[in-house]
Image 1: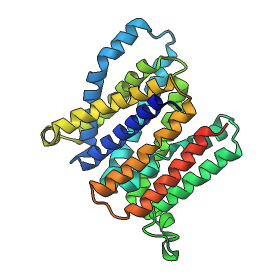
Image 2: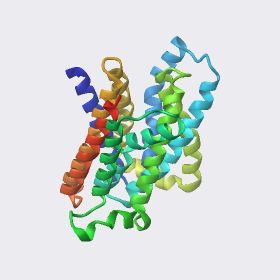
Image 3: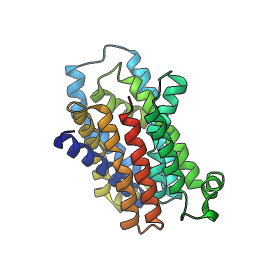
Image 4: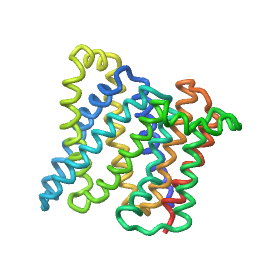
Length: 292
């Protein structure tokens, strides 16, 4: 794997984890996400219109796929913000980013894809890593804690709902780019998602809360919008110079970044065992991405 590709993917992974840290630290996380998504649309619009003029959209079905992706992202945002509201970054982020394993399972069950022994091993490693992250320590009394938390802990429940949403929008997005240029899709999926999300914000929040969130950290809101779009562009560029499987596997390092950020900047507990679980998830994601 080239040094340039490695640098691009690691920077993208760092950006994703950093935006998650900012979201976790925000006051009203749903408003924070809405504000930085609005800014991301504004920031990305010149590139979008340039590609719209140069490439265009030939297949009308592209709009339906973009609308479908937007709706799954809307659900993802709802689950994501509730997960960050209820739980630690170092706890919920690794669960939510374990989507490669679930995507592979969905692809096997619904798309008829075949899976190798290496892929099965990767799925099992991801499952073990997620299980360990829900433990406070390695001990007999903690052995059933993750199963119990799935039924009683709201942060774990929202993290798994977010994971499911990520898996489904990943499948939808994979099929959508067959009908539309990736750059155009990057804008449209966010645009359609905001078409669903904005009415939700309007009806559930008020102007005072929105102003309060904006004034509490406009710099972080703007930065989150920029690094979100730039991080996505870095991945698209990396795809042009390296194998997709390599990119996807290395991108899982965002899990490790998020756990380290949660432990260091937010002073979250159980950093050691969560880091161990994150490394196991990364190993599983690596095997899945490399599986033939």
